[in-house]
Length: 452
Image (tube, rainbow, N blue to C red; front, side):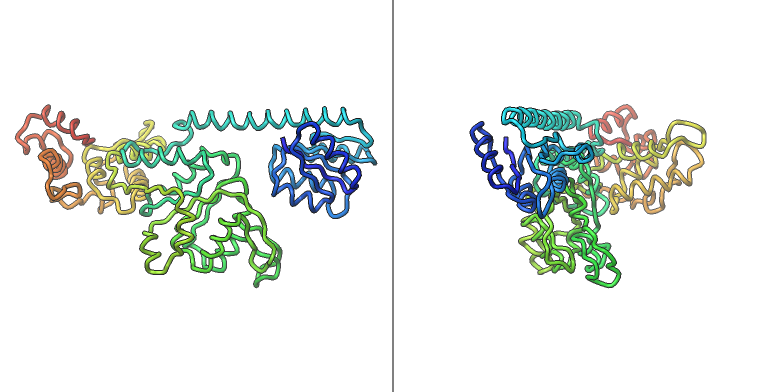
């Protein structure tokens, strides 16, 4: 265990250092309040033993700073001028113990041993809670999907969540990048901290810098008081930088410094503020191409791209369309007929599966929200879907999944899908066109994983 000893009286500080080193403690000393505040961040002690009355910063200020650095730090306050009021104030602010000078060495060591044991129990309890969360992770908001490519993304997200590594999520708009970022936060050691986010393309450069790094009073018109940036506000949590590729060059430089030095300098200030936050960034651009064009800094890219997750577009995970549709319709609530949730007709489901979804999961959700609004029945028919979805061009045989040398299975699957679409999802008519028995068609649909 590491203990930080703080007292402005050198003789007492030397005595305490000899005492604790003799008992095998890892000792850090500070002979003033300001030095103690610096040591909290630099040394990360487990226990703090501090005098209350000191110039520069009082013991109560050291206590408050320690609680910000690590809520599990046990702080013991000592004073030669004890009062009931100061004792109550210390306990209310989270002090482990309030000790009056002079004291016996054995008494002090016993108190610090109990404080160390209490800290160990709190840390272990927190660790066990995180472990239970990780074991039960499928039940705590796992994003929906069964497509192999999507499952790979989730499994990698679950693996990196328990680390503190920076993550870069790439993928088209609407693929669920923020959903996965939140999932990583939920499974991480930082899940008790805040999850904060900002869209880097939604704000002008000056405002984005102020929001990220904060500003001081008078730094620009309208800055009427000091303001912490979101990177500071997200301390001990996760910060999600959406559309990082839209960030200006000057802001990229400041973000790189914040990640490297783990500190930010507010707009209009020269004083650095330490930050303790995990960065998860996302982009719908090919950042390698942006680097080649000079639009994105390579050093920032490599800082962000410690772990990269690529979100597959919905057209590459068509087996998830039925699952996602059911999920969105379940969320829509009861139907006009009082049934538990809406369902989709065969023709409507076929249209959903066949559409390429350039807006991805977000577009699918919006399309189904529209369908619920316009549908007068609990079963959503084809005509309730947006026109762009239901009017899929019929020549689907030149399909997206046909390679230059497709196998017969690939060709047959594409042909069955085309016929089903042409017949509005009617399986009996599709079987007639295909020249096979309906039971044979159902076996083929099952074999090819077609949920129509």
